[in-house]
Image (tube, rainbow, N blue to C red; front, side, top):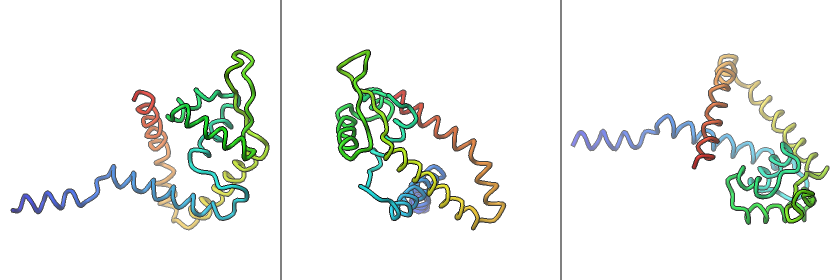
Length: 161
């Protein structure tokens, strides 16, 4: 009887990995909600923004390579490319090495939108960090290297899987 109660308590109490994952999700959701309000133009979904960020980081990337990098099916990325091109955020150029393949480039509108998003996100974080005491800000600063390593291991696992 006592073991059953302890077992229920153990499953009801979130573990550190669960708490960390839940916190990341909650923070990301709140950031998106707060930043959506001031955007002009069509609302972009998460996968569309990820693709735009990837193209910004690697201009000229191909659709197949983008699909691998984003861990999406090639036809899904093709659909995203078509939508973003239609909305004026991406340009497809024929790959000179393989006329059947396309190379992706951001439009000026996409570059401005990403820059605006980054600026507004940095301002939002700056305001919120200013509301924390110095000990909390230092704890977050000290956690950055470990969080970067966590992101890298998540990326590696996705690449291996």
